[in-house]
Amino acid sequence: MNPHFAWWRAAQTASSKTRERFSLTYSYSSLVWQALWVLLMVSLSLSTSCSSVQSSIEEIMTGEPPADKTYAGRQHFPVTPTEAVECLIAIAPKEGWQVVSTGEEYSTQGIQGRFFRIERIESISNKPALSGVFYAEPSGSFVHVSEQNGLPESLVEPLIAEIKKTKRDR
Image (tube, rainbow, N blue to C red; front, side, top):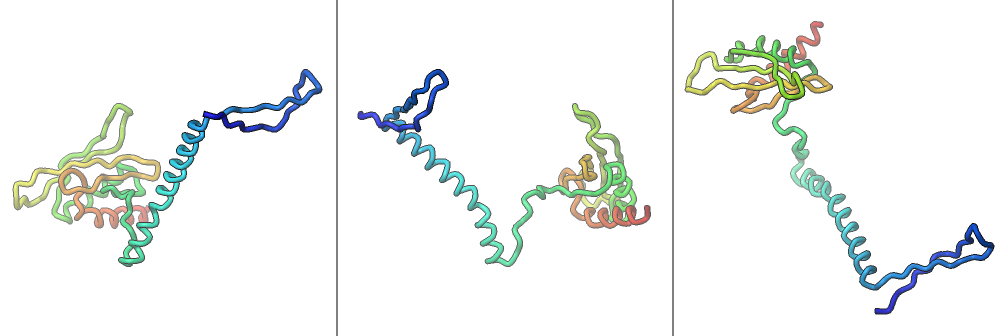
């Protein structure tokens, strides 16, 4: 293969007053690999930048905003986990639930929040008790919403209303 020369501008060295010309030799195969690398980077950037276009088009076509991908079955509250459990204890009987037990949730990093265990007051079926945890976060707390392991969906709205009422009364 014939080498391809890429010339850099002439530079004066510190030891002499003469100017020297630097050259860098490339083989054609290395230029091909560099071109393929640039093509790969351009295609990756285009594919990632156009991913939001699909959701925008879906929103225009259906008229509905796209689903919140950060939801993930969590409900956030602007209160501490302890206050959230207290509000849950207050509203559970009104909604047909009973809080059986509560306590601190521990992990290897220390206290992570407050757990709760709830049961139906009148057990129509043999559904087991549900357990969940109000996890601490900088803005307050959050809980997983689930009918199998977490806060039941039917208790979310009453709990939000109780928390708003509690915060307003302070």
